[in-house]
Length: 251
Image (cartoon, rainbow, N blue to C red; front, side, top):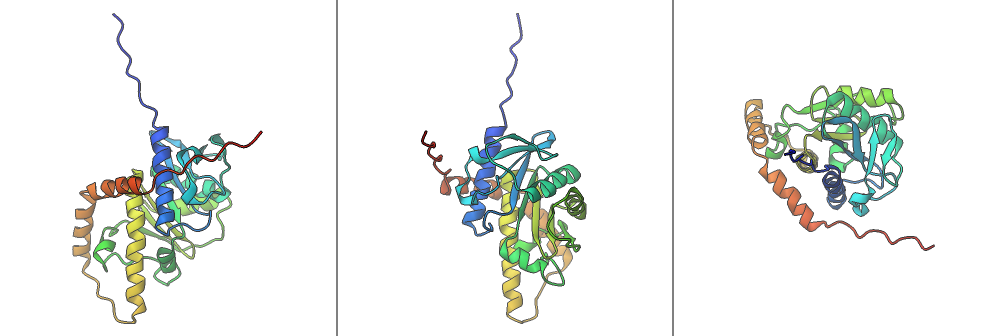
């Protein structure tokens, strides 16, 4: 009697839907910038291939069928759209060098504002929300212009130094992680906590951080239970349904 071979489900459809949802959510939350910036997710157990948003589409209009599959050399393996060059140079390097499965890169307003200051980044000892990022932040102080070559992408990736959040001087941020739901949750709360810090600084009053020990304890508490992140992403799935497919072109 022959054994029944178990068929492993194809992860691509689910990852495409989740990546498209994260992009629409970012547009909804004001984290997008025109048709620029990029979100990507590596295929399970395959850091050489990853899904990424296409060039030229606003994030609010992206559906699963718009997501593009590429390899780390920049070759489009699947999809009907092109990919923006800096997306390849940054994301391919970060996936390959850091090993992170999910890489979200934005120029979201408040986080980017902090990259323009002498401190370059969020202070994770200020607000309770900011404390979730204690011990997770890298600062890349070496702005070199647009990432239009492999060397610059690799330099950015190495600047992350084993962290999953990077503030890129005079540029923007990268938030990375193991799942789309958790990484998007981190991206959303990173911008919220940067907003809180910018507003507090704008008062001109002295800031009142907590000690590092408390911030570290709060970070462990938040990272130790991520159900809220999953529930948030499922709420976004209900609130931001996929757009209707574009009509077929007339013959």
